[in-house]
Length: 287
Image (cartoon, rainbow, N blue to C red; front, side, top):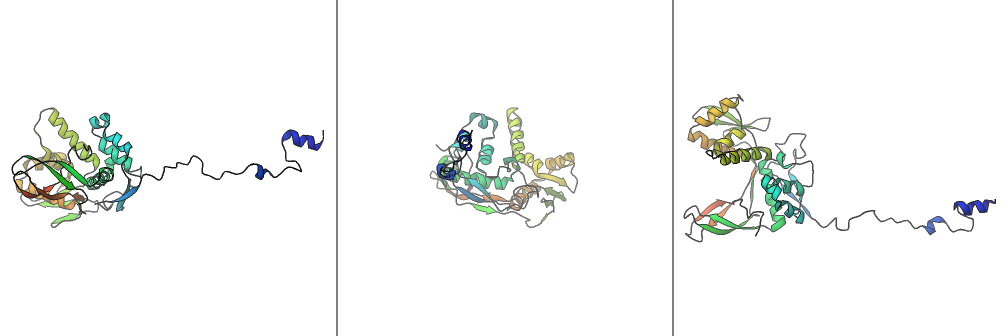
């Protein structure tokens, strides 16, 4: 058998054959490319904490912003999922869906940062106009009022007058009447979930609501450097009202959070008053 016969049988190139590259043009187009991958825009959300109070191994440690995707039909499916709504985790799933960095979980977000992302996500999905029913503080009538979610202020937190920030990211607040130093921490999504679970359990069992003292138990770390839960509970139960008010007000000053307080005018009685934007069912479940 000749060399030519072998070449013809094996498909090897023959002398008078054109170069292989001319017969088989190379397709340099990307494989499995998605022509719509650019459609969903993103934006950066300013974090009230500026990442200062996350541990070093957290993705948001010292990060001043977080990148999120605009809400899509996928997120609307999450918001209307009966299973997720029943479990009370629809909002958390929404946040984890729009946050680009999948290492970040809703449970690990500081409350103020979580609130900022919730508001930003709502704006990307339905715009800044938020129309909802508000109970007038004066005449107690329901009034339809429109809030502007873009009219949001940020409280970056940090030490307030008469407080001390520790190296652990906690704060020391002195209570004058009982003369003790109370160490408080910033709450996370996990803490918020535990607090909501406790409140729902009491409601289900028809027990007295103790939302204020429950919140104190959640964020108080120690009393005069003592971390005994029994001692902390005793202080909370016997705390004079003046100290309780100071603890609440000071805590609100030191924690990073958003401020959605806006001017409210009652169409029924004419009351003009600054009112905090209520997070009702209309916030995400727009009619």
